[in-house]
Image (cartoon, rainbow, N blue to C red):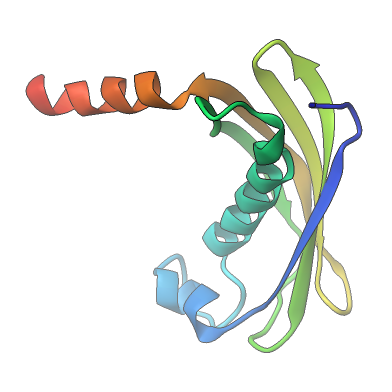
Length: 130
């Protein structure tokens, strides 16, 4: 069951695969903002996935992210999420991401509960509309 202040965390080691160079979001070998965003979405999604019915999933709809500090390859990063708002099918999470030295990011992430079959069908319909 979904509950306010439901918390979760995920930890990973930054590898070359997650750098700005590799994901082509910049030139430096540091933890890329798109990779950081993926960690936030994964943490939020997995934190509530077991609370949904088999027919349901969530999709990300909004993110406000302040990327505050660089993280080099080899450091561990940990994302903490907290479910702060449940408004029918709208879920809002606050998050903070730390490396082994600093707070490196903070913000909010919004997800919506959807029917997985209907959502997939709606997406597939676009193939016939082009």
